[in-house]
Image (cartoon, rainbow, N blue to C red; front, side):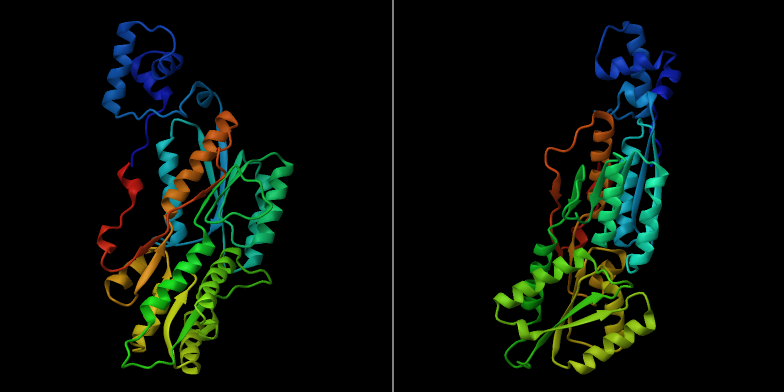
Amino acid sequence: MAKQLTIADIAKLSGVSAGTVDRILHNRGKVAPATRAAVEKVLQESGYRFNIHTSAVALKKGYRITVTMPSSVDGEYWNQMLNGIGHALDEFSDIKLECGFCFYNPFDMYSCRTVFESIPAQEPDAVLIGPVFPDETMKLCNSLKNRNIPYVFVDEDIPGSSPVASYSTDQTACGRLMGKLLHLTSTPPPFRKLNIEYGLFQPSATGAESSYKQEKREAGFTGYFSEAGLSGKIKKADIPLLNPHECEKSVLGFLHDHPDINGIALMHSRGDIIADILNRNRMEGITLLAFDLTAGNRKCIMDGKMTAVISQHPEMQGFSAVKSIIRYLLYKQCDKKISHRMPIDIVVAENLPYCRNYLAEL
């Protein structure tokens, strides 16, 4: 998407001052009809989109935002979050925003620590945080608080912190939903085996601290099975998703040790990795569920290698987080509601063709 003209650009093209353009956009003060007509002509020809954040103060001061979150590649969950952030920066391009990115390995607590420790010294005006490890995140939050630097969460919020806003799904509810979905989709007909078990896969990580989000998902998942009287049917495994050879060895070893597994729930977005292992080794008849409508997961659903995913609208999270940061920087206003919960969608083959990125339509 092309960069939108700034008020200064419009003023130059119209042959008037930036203050005059600002008065026209905000309908403040008197402006000569000829001057108004000249400005409105430029606005119409440029396709300018006015929004409430465009103001005189934005012309005089720039802001630096640091975005820190797990690294990813095109089509993955965090890359979709970045797309939402990029859309917001484009949408509010009249405001002078300089955005820097600090990525870390979500499977390595020490990588997260190193990146987080570097952020306060950058002296940003605000920070957008995609947290994984709660203790490391709280250290960063405390450091930002001591420097009066506001921050916003995406994907998850951390207890004890004080963000300007947070955008995420209810991870415990997500876990319960996945448990129920796995139970319903993995139950065999009467003529098949009755002694079935359910696999719960968590991604293994380096470091003593585990992901707060994964813990909440697992709590919701196991809570559902406990209430259903099936706690003993859950078999857990930590899977090294980043190491292809060890990952496949781990998955096959798990299924060898647990031959009654009829369904697997992966508490992560890389379900396509597990799906490819099952398909490559002709492990048929096993229901597979994962999180997020990534490019890989989308293809696996289309090809029949995966049953369903739970989607969390990462693009909308990223877009909304930037919008909250802008509102705070310009007006020092926190959201009236700090914690914003995203919709939880179940995507299967039947509704996959109708799932789309709503931000692209704005």
